[in-house]
Length: 538
Image 1 (cartoon, one colour):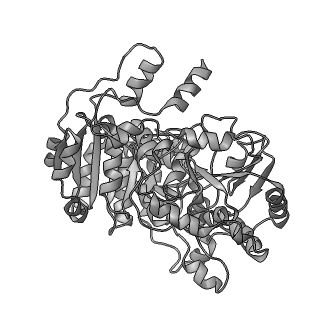
Image 2 (tube, one colour):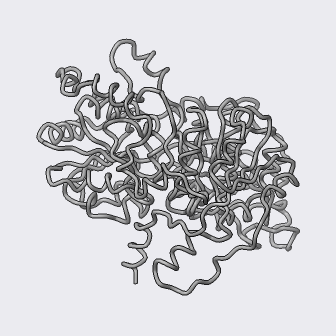
Image 3 (cartoon, one colour):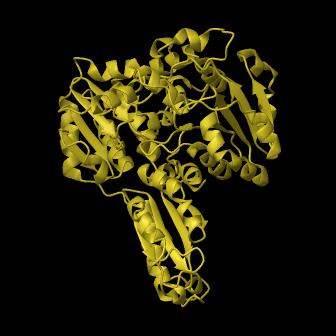
């Protein structure tokens, strides 16, 4: 939930737990946020200091179940506050570590007697807002080298990653001015309008052949990878289409840059500042006439949906079938919900189907920013969140992430519908969190892909020719589960069942709704990237 709130609001997500099992129950969510660079403050408890070493209840001290040590490898800052006078300095350090690249969770753990102690300071000693403000420093020499490479390149393709949130306007402005095609990583898809005429699809897990073709075109002599960690899922399984000498990797995180030693150039710095500078230079050289913006608008108006040639099985996306295909479900979700909807897709098949087939019906123009004029007004128009219309989790890929994430997202965006696309396996794992959405009166639509299996495991075993084991789930009526927890629910078995739903009513309800969608269990998700990596690991 703190993860989802941070992605939506652009603020630090905060979660608290007691000592012992309360702390260990946080670890999977904290690790997921760590692996996805989500800033969070994690606060846990400890027994009183005098009881350390005496085996107190739920002991999580250094002489018991050492939770401080457990959090060490999934946090950016991790410390025990053993005296009230340590609190302010350690809190400042924790918050700074959370918001500085590489971003992630910071953990502070408090013995109960220290937490109960009076604060030794009556007022803050530091200007917290100033200390946490993002730095806009850029390397002028590095940008000059980048600009020279751009001037010399004949065919550039941009790979937009999930860390491009606040800079996406400037990046798309650059693409339009240069007429440069772009693709996205799975976690970057939600930052762009998929109807943009320069968009060539998603590269990586659940992605499109059109994106691979754009990167592999013989004429391509420069690839800009921006704001991406280049892990397995957002590099196409470390595909050589990107990881070669044509690559220039631009990122704020040194950790991300270390994954591309073969790159022609690394440009480290705040992505927004880098592309603001590049766009300003292009405008000064009057390069914005190289691309016909009327063509952009005309193309957008003529393409109501994503181009069908981008999809693996367009007939299942657009056609009518007796069974509810996941492809068709993604089409229905994208076209029936309003443009302001936030979609969160859970780990597994939910991610594969959403990344490949989910395309919202949006009439909004492409997100671009015009630089120049009053800089203060420009700063006021900047996006304050790294979240887009679609949010997925990379790398650590914890099942059930989207269920709690949707609750945090809804708390951070009370006026926007939130749709959580999850599987029956994930719902059986974390579905009890619906009670939190009920208690908070949050408008969330939970869409359960019900195929009575752990879908990615099942199809992975089939594609690999392996024994089918441990993937079958018993029949579950998730509508009854939702009602038992205080939510409303509907069962959908065929596409026309969507017609009976009042989507406007669902999106304005003060509380959650669950849609138990019985999808075609034999539909194979686009998971070739994962299968190729597993095959190469043998």
